[in-house]
Image 1 (spheres, helix red, strand yellow):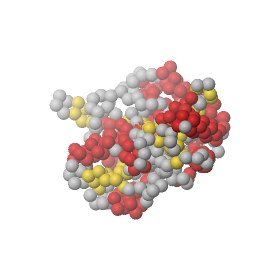
Image 2 (cartoon, protein in one colour):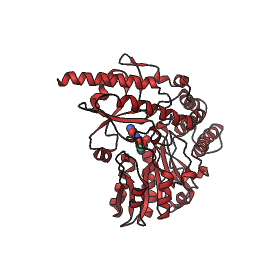
Image 3 (cartoon, helix red, strand yellow):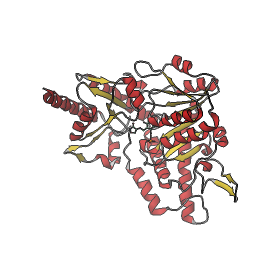
Image 4 (tube, rainbow, N blue to C red):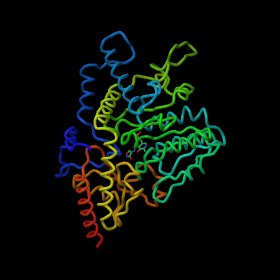
Length: 410
Ligand code: 7TS
């Protein structure tokens, strides 16, 4: 159970938008930040601000300890074997591009296959499209069941001995579908392929154990889990990271620099060229403390309850269609929908007039929109601070939108 007073930790929620108390239902885009995270960043800038890994002065040591302390929190949070496997990046997009540009370029050749699904966010699609074009490799899609889930039969059909990389969302940002990563990883490994997990919509919502999943890489963003923007993580198995070439050359990532040749720093630093986002990493560490205090099992239980409630209430409105599996335990905390005869942008605009923030559009998943045979949808996404009362407000807002457009269209 999540205590209802959790909302009081999120100062931004305590305001009116267009004359109504704010209902924030756009956490899949970015979550709000609790006071603990805001304070951690403030504390860093007021007490520790300095560059890291340069030794000698006290502030520098404090900043380094906090930055590396955050790396250890991330390691523990996803149960990686070692902090050498935790690379701080700018976010999921950056992490996935790093895998494609470094591991992908070195390991994918002509005629090889890269396997993804129709539900991928553009960040887990375009880097592979580009790599496939560059290497004359084949980009293959695993077909989905009509409810937007994956079946292992289709997974097994798609992955072959030609497959070098399988890259799949942990959870879809549109359908909410949670994918069976552990099972897919076993199939990928049986064919000698690696599995990359886009964890942007998974890691913030349920317990993630990289050793149990046996994934080769995992990418996620701090800002979708109560942390600041501009910080994310790439987890990679040490055996892969050790053999990969760095991408950002310069300070921080070197060992010995000569006039014509240089050697690279040890893991994870060889992938962290330049002054890192120190405050961002510290903020992410504070976000992890916050989430662990609530408990990841409580978070997903809360989201299942909200999804169940939302699906039930929205289904009761005439003309509303809901995408993705209707079983709330098969999904994370979001509901994507359309209303007959009302464009999702109009839905979102009317909801905003009522103080309710939802996202409308293609959600950076254009191939999925095509698969769903629509151009856009509206999406309400939940996190720890949302309640059933927020969903009641959404339902009321949708009834208002429907009435308004029924009158306009008459
Ligand atoms: N992968 C998935 C599954 C996502 O949902 C997102 C962002 C990304 C990757 C990219 O993350 P970033 O932090 O690098 O931008 N998803 C969304 C969304 O659904 N609405 O706004 C951003």
